[in-house]
Image 1: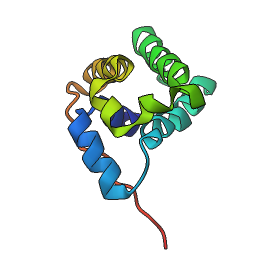
Image 2: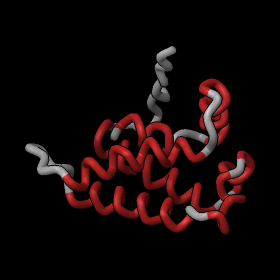
Image 3: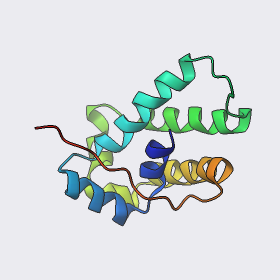
Length: 116
């Protein structure tokens, strides 16, 4: 989850650098989160996240879900990362959770290891 939140909480310029480095589309930011969130939400953890962190994770999930669909394609453009209000909301929520879990939101962005 920390890796996914680091991606969502990063400044838009850093997100674009990451997207370009790994030659992925903007959707990958949300897909990283979605994969982990589904596992987290459905598991019985020994040390569950506090309710406030889970509330914020559910809100991130809801905002990303609201942004999905063909009618919202422009929200997934490179420009929208810096200008769209929902991206600002997702970024702020991700940062809040990171601070509560890690003490800081400024974390290195995860690497993707491509197997060829």
